[in-house]
Length: 185
Image (tube, rainbow, N blue to C red; front, side, top):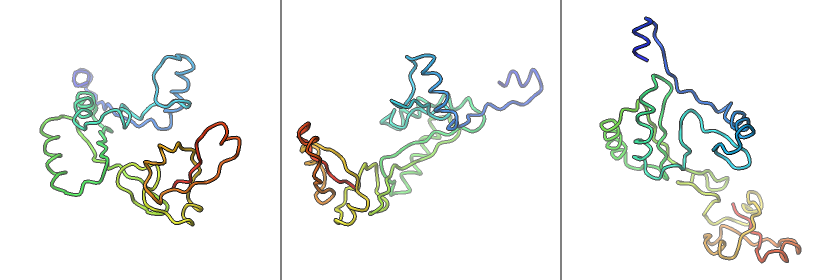
């Protein structure tokens, strides 16, 4: 791009723009034209915004930094690499040291530290990803906020005590499967 700028005397910007509005429409159109194309999602295809890999594509933050470094450094604007953490970082010195190491080893212009958390209508903030509130719930909380989920006895055994209650399922479901329906928050 610098060669073209020098040749033409014009300034150019290679912007990494988010594509949230077009991500579903373009992925759906591409799937219809090219059924074997890879897109995120299962029944409803979508593309991640800009050139970001899916959130769960890397387990190690240095893997995503190495993967994205050359690509992100080509942009002159609108670029960011989101580094997702499974929990809140409690010690600011850890963030300072991590920032120092990233800026010394990589050329990418912008990055963000993003802790993963969940919000429960009963308990509020929960550090990390939770599909249901792991804390014990009152009968009233389960009635107001719980959802019916069919689970095997093995799955239920892994749940924290008090975070669910057994709800009778219809006779047809009970005969088809030996699963019970549980209300989770």
